[in-house]
Length: 172
Image (cartoon, rainbow, N blue to C red; front, side, top):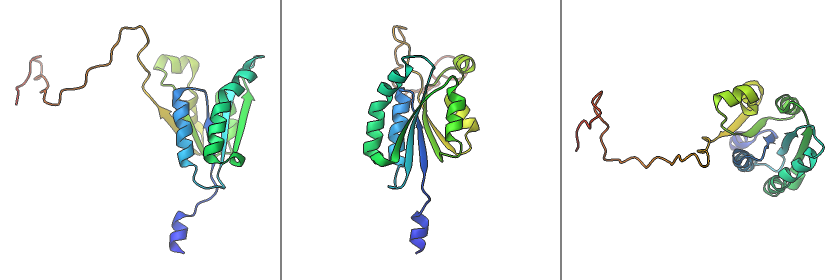
């Protein structure tokens, strides 16, 4: 009886806020890993702008992810929520409030200026959602054609330069 008490938990309601980014795909994989009980429920949320073609684009974007979630979590336990909105941040919070225990999403890793100008949905959700919120964050990739190459791996035998000299402090 004591063991059952330790493993028993209430029905969980999850929401994957999906925007098609690689981080959102990783968030979908995480949701499937979190989804443990047959009674748990999940929603795939996607807010899109108010334009004539937006609904079609949203359906095409979400269809493969919805199928993957339905296979991994059970078809009857996954709801696809496509909502036409002018403010995705507010609409996502309205949808989740009272309906969701855990919100899982990706974060595109916008810089400070872009976050300030465009607003970050994940930052807003992490600060305002009253349940548990998980944001998958990756460093933004180097811009294509910028000539930037990844740094070479660090040499484990190298000794860092001495303070203020610019030369090695010594070798082993």
